[in-house]
Image (tube, rainbow, N blue to C red; front, side):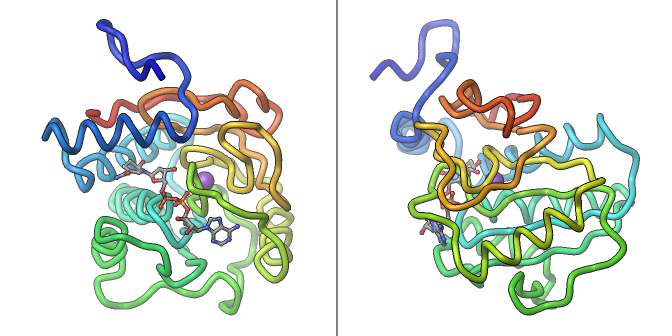
Length: 214
Ligand SMILES: NC(=O)C1=CN([C@@H]2O[C@H](COP(=O)(O)OP(=O)(O)OC[C@H]3O[C@@H](n4cnc5c(N)ncnc54)[C@H](O)[C@@H]3O)[C@@H](O)[C@H]2O)[C@H](O)CC1
Ligand SMILES: [K+]
């Protein structure tokens, strides 16, 4: 699989190809995974700041590295005057050290409210940041998470909706919806597009690409 060319990244990579590029970049010492995550979050926050003035944001963080990106976004938006409500799904069950570190940087020891049990902020937010699942989505979103996400989607129907990497629930390679998904106005992805960005513009919205140093 061609993962880059002499003039930079290829235009589109499937999830496995993306992971190969990440692994090679980390092994070669071009960038650390922690720095890549910080740059990913910086890119998402910068894109949001280009589109909207500060307001009320609901940031959804999943159990893995997509969630880690979300905690970077929450921290950076808060520093720019955004009023942030963060909700975590899965209590970092799949979080590696990078996501855990970014979560602690955001929380400062206060803890992040649980997506399934904590009350939802009302009125609806001005911004919804979807950092639940990215290229690691492995199974359908169903049951209590799906019910809660449908509630959030309704609460945020007037919000500017930004997907971190991909709308959660969307299979990166096939563009199929696994259970349910959160359609986005903007998807901010990393290094290059994934097939789903071109297969499902109806769900991804506008796509912006962030160089994370790979
Ligand atoms: N250092 C890096 O590699 C960088 C990665 N970036 C971001 O990381 C995600 C990919 O992260 P990963 O942890 O592999 O997967 P996800 O966060 O997408 O998924 C989380 C985790 O959740 C579990 N899971 C999968 N499906 C379900 C489900 N339906 N219900 C519950 N739990 C589920 C599974 O265990 C997954 O591992 C990538 O998209 C980027 O956003 C950084 O951007 C750059 C550095
Ligand atoms: K996402």
